[in-house]
Length: 619
Image (cartoon, rainbow, N blue to C red; front, side, top):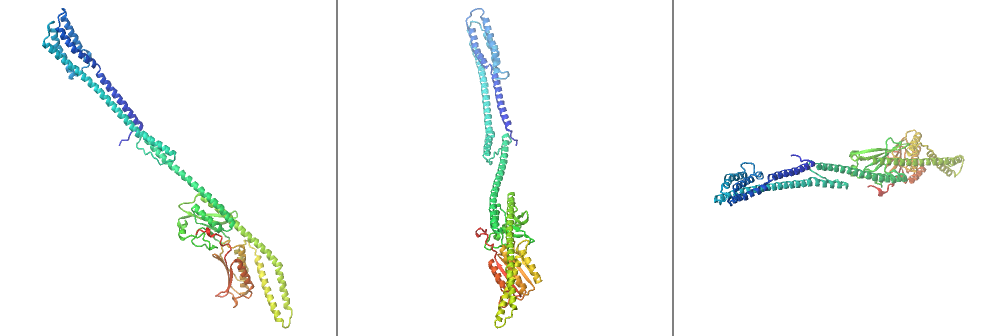
């Protein structure tokens, strides 16, 4: 199919058609007007020929006025013939020989020359005209009338043709103008209105309108350009709007996250406990950023592998959990299976928790692989790791400072005990020894010996307990923690037993307070002292384990066991251990083992339980 002309070409065609119509109309009108030029004069002259013929007839029948009458009729006839052949008449006669008007004119000329003129010239002047002459004249006049009628009809036909040409030209011009207006309306006005409406809509941020103009003209091309521009503007606007919305949401998330981190930092530094200070904050951060779970691992010099200290989502209670009333990190198996961990199309981000003095731990963050992790979220997590590093460092510093302070106090107490109570006990022992050397006879001797034996036993027990206290108080630790103190204690008693004492230890870092560590260490030392001194054991086992939420310390030996009454020979140490256990909120049990030997067990729950309020638990 032939494509339509562009707009300019169509307008040029319309203009050319109008001009051509006008030229054709003017040319044909001019030609027709030219063809009927002089017809009116010819009709008038032809009409005068009729009257001239009757004048000649009347002149021929009139009285004789003079001798020149004959010449007069001839001159009149000649004059009449000149009028008959006048150029004004001959020009109105078509040049075609077979044209009816030309035939009629030749007939009139022939009749005039052959019949009527000779009759008029040969008629005797003064005599009445004959009926034949009158009939001939009338026949001639009838022929002239026919000629005049034919001239009139021919002129009227030319005028009608002129009218027809003008009507056709007018109609054609009207049709061209109507077609021009229709084309302008359809091809110019409507597209322009569409383009203007699209421009207004684009100004109002409405990019849904489209021109959808058909064709290949300029406005169609302009409409296509408008549609493409509108689509590109819509895409650009929506992209910018989406970016602005995304940035706004990201800024709102950042603001909320920063507020959360600010509140969390205060809680971390106020509680001095990672679980209570970190878990609720990390869970809120997970919901805000669409990430999780988050796990916190601490690096401890006593452990070759990082120790998990905090998790935000777990199907089972973590081994380090000290509060079984808290369910902050527990989720159902169905929820846990949907978390973005390694088995569930998740990606892991590891962030170091470090201070200038060294690496304290690692923050493990899981996030969906398809979603990814934005730069803002990454920066927030880095800020979180810095805050956790500060909190952990300060907590360790406070704990170590408390332990150092306590160690210094213990050193002072040990010095005071050595300088006062130890000397007093030594003095009393010497006095008892002097009393033993006295010879007392009589009935009072058994009572005297019993009292001395009891005093000696009590003094020896008190002196031994004092030496144990002094040994404990004088422990010098590079890092004052329970694990180091236990290892040094095991080395000490292994030397005294002359056989290695086996130790099993799995307490999480920072599980006990300094006071709890001291009492636990003292109970273990007391149990070891009893096993080495009284049990005659060849093997001793020490276990200090964490069985959530309890801490259990067991001292087992393969010695001779307890006496039948269930009390050891020296029961002062058991009393002291029970007092320490009550201070810890726990209990000490001493029993004989089925396989032989004695087991001393300490069970207590660390005082740092119930740190996470129940109402903040996630499940």
